[in-house]
Image (cartoon, rainbow, N blue to C red):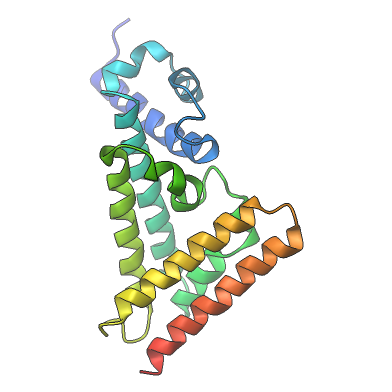
Length: 195
């Protein structure tokens, strides 16, 4: 049975969305095409009509995940009287730590992405730059020459803390990593104010 162009595009979008979640949950190599397509309610046979390769899908799913993460930061910041604090509280929370399939793709896939093709890594670089831009905009005196370096340190701390907190079996230690990173990110942001 022939599928309409609109339905084919809807199927393609469904596969990208499902892959975005499943890759974060299982890693790029932890799930096969059959299970990705099954997760979207489709058969594996249609995959190559929609995507050039698994790398093509991984790149598009990564872009979708990074864009979602950036929009999430922007939305939480826009809805808060203290935008930077809202982003810190969202990101360095127990809830985010537990959001493996919908959480930050840098945490879920960072080390895995580093081993992928340039095509798959490119959306991560774009997403990192977008996250840095948001942090720069939320920091006092973001126009200072050191602002970008501060944003880099903050993002590194945040991603690292959530990554480590997910690894740990000790709940108390896991929580302490999130809290310590939040305190340090606040300190870095405050240091921009003191310039």
